[in-house]
Length: 110
Image (cartoon, rainbow, N blue to C red; front, side, top):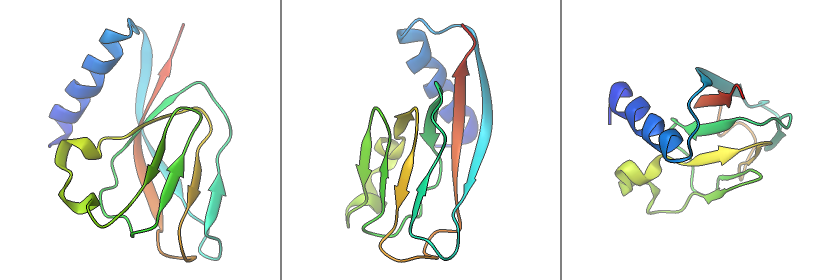
């Protein structure tokens, strides 16, 4: 799925929730190289995971969703578009396995 299709998909999701006024950007989360766990600040935004190459055993959790990467992750296609809301917690089996994670971030304005 290319960027235009992905943004269109996200806009459809927001429309079904009647969210019409929002800020959208690319959000990069840098993982500390010596740690295997990271907590973000809590906010009212939605995060749509763009990073597709994740090591098996990676867990991403938020106030609304949990993703556990298993051996079938590579073949999931469009279902890889995971939505997370609020504070994120990222855990990897070993420090340094992930340098950064990219998300499309959506923050409702009203």
